[in-house]
Amino acid sequence: MLQKSIAALALSALSLCAQNVDRTKAPATPPIPSYKLPPVFQTKLPNGLAIEIVEDARFPLVTARVNFMAGSKFDPAAMPGLAEAVATLLNEGTKTRSSRQISEETDAIGGGLGASAGPDSLTVVGNSLSENLPKMLDLVADITLNANFPQNEVSLYQQNRIQSLRQEHSQSSFLAAEKMAQVAYGSSPYAHIGPTAEAVQKLDPKTLTQFRDTYLVPNNATLILIGKLPARAELMALLTKQFGVWQQKPLPPATRIEPPAPHRQIVLVDRPGSVQADIHVGRLAPIRTTSEYFPLTVGNNILGGGTNSRMFQDIREREGFAYDAHSEYATNREAATLSAVTEVRNEVIEPALKAVLAEMDKLATTKVEAEELTNVKNYMAGLYLLRLETQDGLATQLNNMKTLGLPDNYLETYTTRVRSVEPDQILAVGAKYLATGQAAIVVVGDASKIADALKKFGDVTIAKAN
Image (cartoon, rainbow, N blue to C red; front, side, top):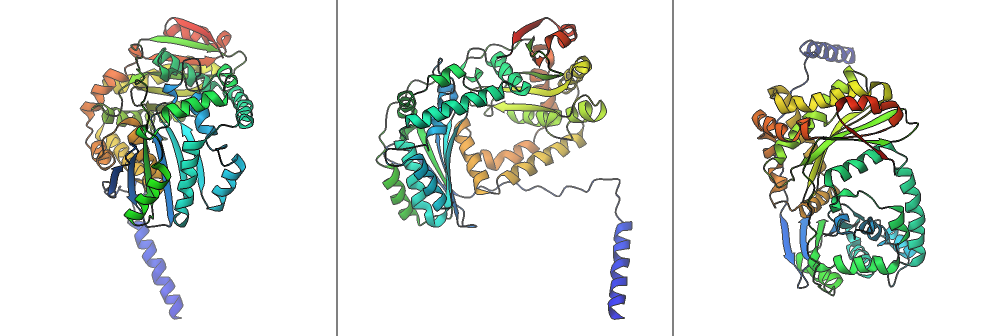
């Protein structure tokens, strides 16, 4: 009897609570806190290797990054993709370990090991259980200092990369991104987003080693270490043992990035037989160290930063032109691009492109309403904080700071700077970077089906798909 009475009271309470909930309104977003970066200990070895150490004792894990300013913008003109190949092959053999031995030793310590290259930097990544930190650092140091690029591994990489290149060039989205980079960056190193088959075929151990010996040097590197770590003196002794023998070398002169001035142009990459058209509308944009970055990144999120963005709601939800519609703000160290992107059926290319241009021009001419701006700021701040919850997330952000030349307080001031963006600021950067008068339009599709529709927007240059 008592149990029945308790159950009845509980149901009654739930009923009263339900009556007080207004389901026509979204629940209020609680205040989003600022991010507090844990103390970062910074030092430097005599050979020039910069070190950043962050204690995180929540879990018995350690994450390492070794960042080099050695990305694809440092590739020789005739060898696009060289930095990417070096990064991929670093853990495929050293002077004392084979590829298989490296893999087995990494598995034995419950860790991961690898490397990747972007436009500006090449990063070696390692992680393990805290108890295996010495072994993990030994592996990281070995592939960084002693990779020897065995010919059999180079040959295998060549075969696999040429196959993946063919697959990439079968996708209209890749062709559009590739052409947009070429249009926006001209002949500057940022113009290539991947290798060519010819460049891959020319790879050999000597070329890979030369790039490694030129750019993967201690005075061009920052080691980031996060996790449950030994006492500071013990840790520094370990780092000195593993990396102290590394020899400093002079670096080549910095690569200059000189993109062409933005101007209106329409480029159609002909892809015969395609039943859809991939649309990219974009231009050069400010880098992260400028005062315009935060207003424009908020504006970018309003334009196409998620399922509640204007492009998604208009082009997909209301018009049904596409499955996806979004915008991309890609910032490198010395230059950046902002693009609106969607893929539509051939028969709706004209109204869909009009809709994309209209959404961009709207942000360039009309102030954002307060409620929409607040919602986007909350979304951006909340997502940002989630990304910093894990060791890997924090290591990635600290690595990005080094790559992009951001100030030490960037992470702690991010949410404040996002919240500080006002409608007038978005309107100002919108008029400068989102107004479509100087935007390039790149479309990948069947020229015989969509060229006439595109000519209604201006002169069209037709290019062949690579």
